[in-house]
Figure (cartoon, rainbow, N blue to C red):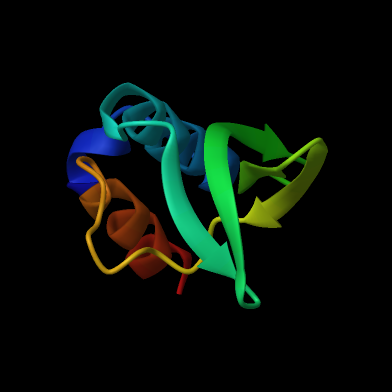
Length: 92
């Protein structure tokens, strides 16, 4: 999966962007998860400096950006969650 997302990439920034694009295309949003014991809805993904993929999470009217590396996935994973796992593997 990582090779598929990064096939034409020349550096870490481009590779992160390639993995972001695959997540954006394949991860079914929104989905519910729990962050520090609080239920949130993952509404969308974003990429922020320095090329870190983040999940934009909402609870009521509050929104927070959580690095996808730190986002706990729900027990019943949403379709496309394998791309999050691929990104986590790549980032090591």
